[in-house]
Image (cartoon, rainbow, N blue to C red; front, side, top):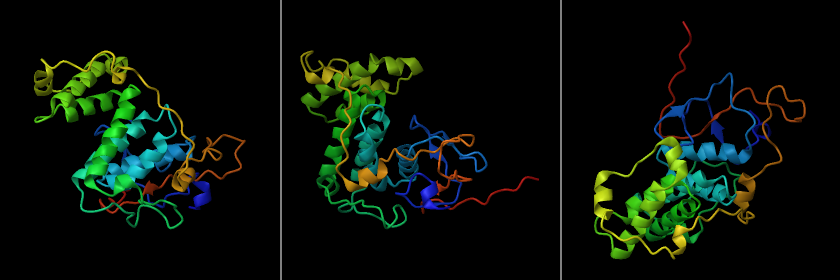
Length: 265
């Protein structure tokens, strides 16, 4: 497949077969149909699918810069910011040295680099993860609010952390987006630990919902990733000057061997 036809030239892809993570970041996944691939998405959306897929395979360090770029697109990309926050915390847990580009995840033309402060130390990655979770939580993303309540309310936390954890628990419980799906992921032990904790005062800025704001991409890699001029069109669309590819390849990973495709009997 020619890269010009994918609408997403930043990344190198291999053959079909990898299950992509759903938008809810749950354990469920859906395989891409070779005969009926998704169409209509922007390059940024396919970038998000790629980042989710490699993060699921244990490569959060390589997915993190993609999530960070997508989060700078502002409102509507809360899940990307949340995923970036969780990935940064995960990468910090697996810290063995300053993060860097690893082969097989990006092609040679990609302008990605890891020469940024938050890639250089375990502490910096932890701080970046918390910063991203705060950004998504402030915008009303319930999973980020729950993640902050768990992280800040863990055993051994300071009084200030516990007070903030109680704030995020309260915002999570009152979050209408959470209630729509009937979700409650905060366990009894955490709620018991925070039961008698006073949250931060009502005057604290963290109580206010703060929408994410779009930032013009400064990083060359982000400008590569966020391209909206060429979008996939439906097979019946007559306005596209692009050739729709016959299949959507998977992101290349080295973590799981590809299963042989079974022929119908």
